[in-house]
Amino acid sequence: MRNRASGIYPLSIQTLRVVFVAGIVIALVGAYLKNRSVIHAGAGIFLFGGAMWGLANGGFLAWVYVRAGRKLGADGFVKDLAANPLKSAVLILLTMFLIAAGIGLSYAAWKAAFPR
Image (tube, rainbow, N blue to C red; front, side, top):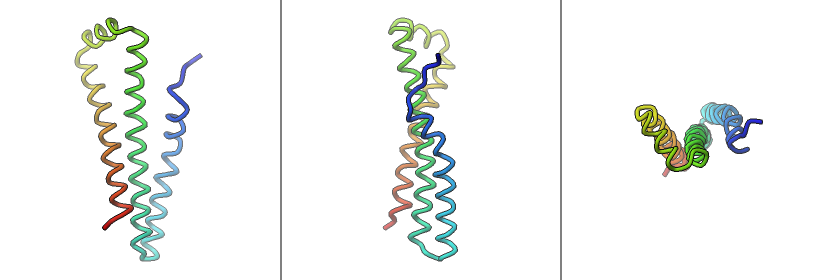
């Protein structure tokens, strides 16, 4: 039986399409109505979808590292990282990028939805 990360990861990945499409539709309706508040709300929802994507995937990769560390033990995990330094560096940088992108897009979504 295959272990899953959690119920949150598959749910967030499945909901991404709905969030992105809803954001675009709301922004287009706001453009048609010429209502800046609705356009900003649609842009905020669309950017929130990007934030959810980054945080879900970055969090999943971080969870994989924690799980591998528990499975291999501290010594085995460090040996595995040292055996493939380039692969490990790329995966760690990818995880950091996805989490940073999620945080940055969360801030952008907030600023788009609530402009001054």
